[in-house]
Length: 103
Length: 121
Image 1 (cartoon, rainbow over the protein chains, first blue to last red):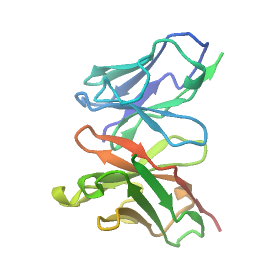
Image 2 (cartoon, each protein chain N blue to C red; image 1 turned 180 degrees about the vertical axis):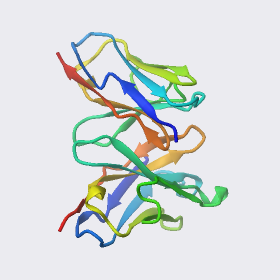
Image 3 (cartoon, chains in turn brown, red; image 1 turned 90 degrees about the vertical axis):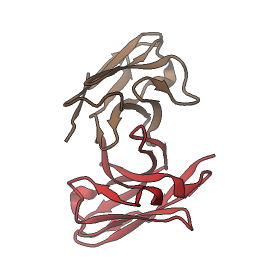
């Protein structure tokens, strides 16, 4: 089974910071990787799919890159509403999550 | 607007059964795979399983942790997906989310609000 490992598990950042989260797959998954944002008490929301395609309605400060086994989610300028937990996913497998908190 | 509404959660004793429903609207239900994802309290997301559309055989796949105990089915005439959970264990306690699955990109593109299942004596 494919395993996805996110790093870091937790990060503290300030509004306006550039933030990067990494997701590593235990084997190559081409570009079949998605990123989700989850706020407390809410369902996850799809941000990016196919590694780099922005879901409709998602702000352009979010971007994704990578293929094979290493992927990144970047938030170019962190906004107050971006403080949340982020997960990578390849359908049957989720990463363990990265919690982004206010510094 | 795509909407997914889960129902059927609640408190159940270990070893008992429960059936969750997911009522969909805003898209042609029969054209899509549907999946279930759960989240134990304070934990991350765990894929439970999915059911393909009838066009792809309506077949199912499950996580190892639930295989043989959980069954996903669908009623395209009612736009409802089901998760039948048997032989429940305390570790099945979680919020269960219904999602629309896009098997082209291996993603869950729309999610319901979730329903809490608590397994406890």
